[in-house]
Length: 133
Image (tube, rainbow, N blue to C red):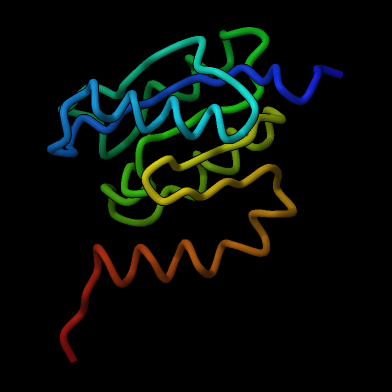
């Protein structure tokens, strides 16, 4: 087991967010430090396909010695037709934690996701699917 202050994270900025990449990296690095680690790999989904998030999971599968991934924002899971629970579950099944720097939110494992899934769904519905009655 790694020492607590030696976690290694993959960073994934949001190509749709208006904040400059450098600003996103600073916020992501702060989250990694808060989680007793550091960013050792950087990435981003391509702007034209970011809503489907097709590249991050294969990258994580082939990157060795990663303890988790820090996304800039929870919004990155909300740009598609529905909240991307499938990707979140697939990452957690790799035994990696998932963190959202802008929101200060972490999900360590599948059990923790079970306790937070309704909050994530409510965030998606309130922020991206604001239905008028």
